[in-house]
Length: 245
Image (cartoon, rainbow, N blue to C red; front, top):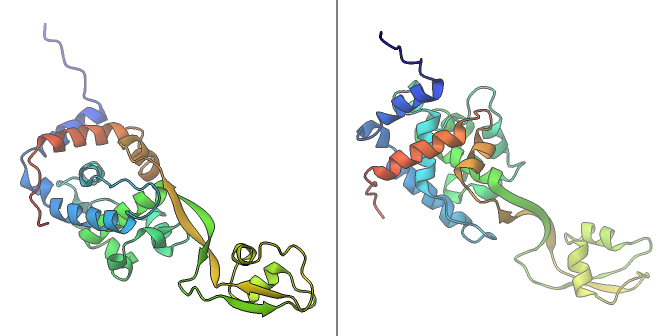
């Protein structure tokens, strides 16, 4: 009596499809673009607190999981950011959530809503930016101006340090630092100040793993981290891309 094999699960069918990537040049066509864009982000963010260089092969695994060479989206939206109903692209490009701190200068004017959903390189750049934006930790901090000139201002009746700071393009912290013994203001008193502002800055980073990518990039697929692990293992077995340094 022939025992019929149980039907394959959705994950097993996905594995069959991804296994075809090994040795298939179509699946590696974006390697050097991924490598180059990841390096641009790594250089741009290297000076921020606690940043660890992103592994470009993690991004390649994301693209394999998100679309793959057999998908219609492969040639326009390989990392799938910017799909209808997906708020990720808008969150990145409006800058309200820290995207302005993440995107490298060479992409600031090039990366647009239109280009990110039609140009595969731009889609990849946007996806990387969104992932990094979600893994950065931010705080509002006093940021001194590049002009280090020390100015003076005479206190008027009704003034407070906050009012003086706002009027003169400085901050409470910057004024207090230059006037440490000043606790109570009086008219006619002279205060020193420097130009400064309160800005959002990156203060630390979450560690990027397949699990954290699943949480921060595609939490809608409960198997996303498992798929990334599987794709990454296949990528590591393959031949590494030889890209121009």
